[in-house]
Image (tube, rainbow, N blue to C red):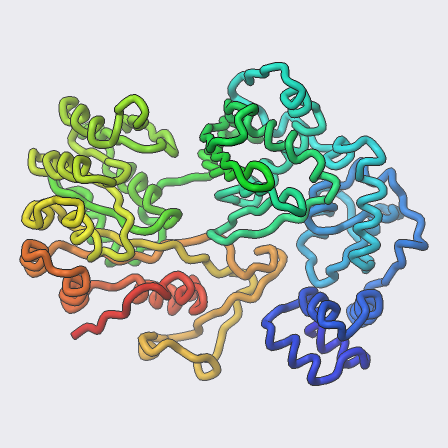
Length: 566
């Protein structure tokens, strides 16, 4: 039963108010929050009613004696991230206060972490926040209490740190700050985060994790704000950056060992109005598997692409915006075709993952080792296959084409919206159209869509939803599904991602049009006429197969042009 319906049945909301909340699209505890923010009901009153309806006790933490000894064994990250607070322990279970009785996943996490059964009780968010502030704030052991009970050897630096002896440097090396930073990194890695955003705002520090392509704000206690400078300095020290320089952007790298597996973290620091902002790209080597067949390609696309990457010479391009999985596709392609009978050399900026059996070069533009310069040197090392991280300029494009014309297979990436745009993009760089047409064998454009959670996905009635006009309703043979949310997927409705692909082959017709410097629109139309599946077409195939949702495909492909087949 929805929260707003419970509140209506208990006379706290009327039908009009319920309709107002339902129209916002929020679910679970967010409906209660919405009713409170709109002034329809008081927080304590609403939570009492919901607790009674679902069979959970409501407690007034202002009048409840709390066993503070439980803080030593209860995971601190759950207290801040999920607003849980242990209240009492008896008969082998721990009573835990929560303001979100609909979210059971954190309670399961707490049970797994403590090894004890969890008995939930409902309390107001204000009361829980007061307990956190009073017992885990500045008044006790400052930041030590914020991150107590975490093992520091869970996160191990693989490189020695350089300390300059300044006051800020010394503060950043305090055990409490180290534990807190380790906690942030550990939580990010465990939740499959690709990027950690730590931002300095007027109100204090903000932490957000990008999981499956979407940013998720992470609750942080207000007391942490006074340690903002120490947290940022600690990360800069770990990344071997200059902690005294706060006016210029800086880039660095952290190498960690987390629970036995190596993790690389790319760090970027930029100065902002209210302090420095940090973004960390997490490259979890232990969690990455470069397998072309597991990326989400349909059988026909995989069969064609698998043949393309094995041709003796030519250029194969992979296109898409930042974060669309281009590097993963290229790495997976190299791992599929590598062997003792061929030599593969890559030039990348940066080298994200180190691959066995493949020679990788790190670009250093400051010393003149650019893509184009390294590519010229690579050709003197007798490679069979060359990967260029990105074609950014005319010189790199010309060198890639020259490599192709001299009998090498070249893989690279371009930042274009679709496959057809790659041909015109290279021409715009200054490459002669006939060279583009004669060397580029195929272009793969791709995006990443979130994969539906198999535990909670729900079938939808096609008659009840407004289908896009290009959705192939006639191909649907079974159910299509929508996202719901459960404890397994942290109430998001999605878990993991898969690719949608648009593979454009350089047929004779495409070659002729590219030689004539035709527009990307004309190239795309002829490709579709010859049977090419567009990104949206492939997305619909994923929807029909029950792998993702209509909303997700529309979100990712809303900027794509719909090309008629005739």
